[in-house]
Image (cartoon, rainbow, N blue to C red; front, side, top):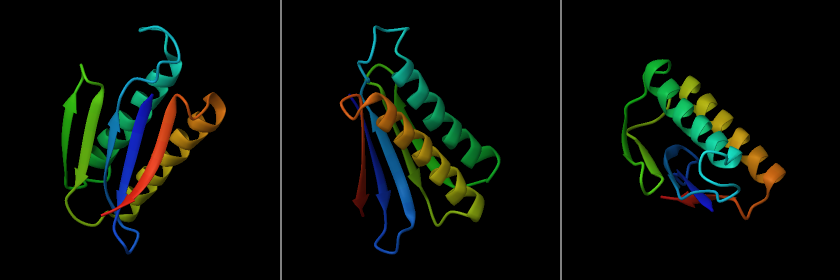
Length: 109
């Protein structure tokens, strides 16, 4: 299962997120759930960095299937929209393929 934790402040500001694990929907190279999650997460990170110019730090461990994005300050409106879009896409994947393959949690930090 892929687990995603979205971190937000008490005021509702995004602080970062962690994506960890492999979906297990199909065998390696054929897992459309894992591939879809990866595309959404990596595209959001790249877009926040290159298009919205957000200040953030990213750590990844490909073997463990983990990527962590820490946002270093409040997001611009573009950054918020990109986060909202990523979460919408991930939520749709979880709804369509089942929560046994993808779990999304929100954590107050």
